[in-house]
Length: 132
Image (cartoon, rainbow, N blue to C red; front, side, top):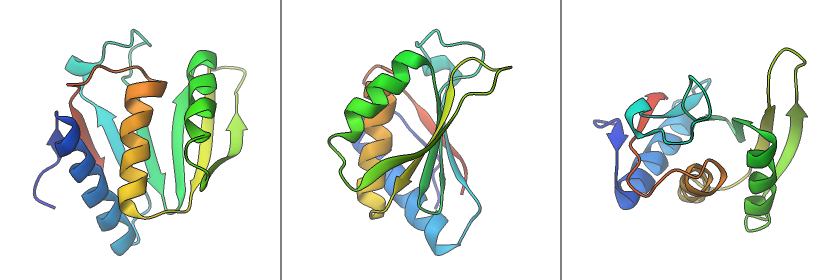
């Protein structure tokens, strides 16, 4: 991969698909996609939204409202399912682990929609692939 950020939907989809394919080809531990702090309009705290891919698992932190939106989104991705929800007492929110048994393009589509629909980011948010 030669680029690591994108701001338009088409560019982000290509970036996410390329990163997922590279992650799987390299058998990497984790692929991480972070939202550029300047693009984060979620008012969700100090850390902008992020999503990680570890093999066939997508990992993301959600507030209660975001978790409900994640469940709604998953109804459109029958090959994806929540495998684990962890809500530590010392943290607000829930860490969701979603099994994503699909190709890189479908994973990319899910990641894009999760940022837009679960985290409610605007159409021009900038995302960075910070680990592959």
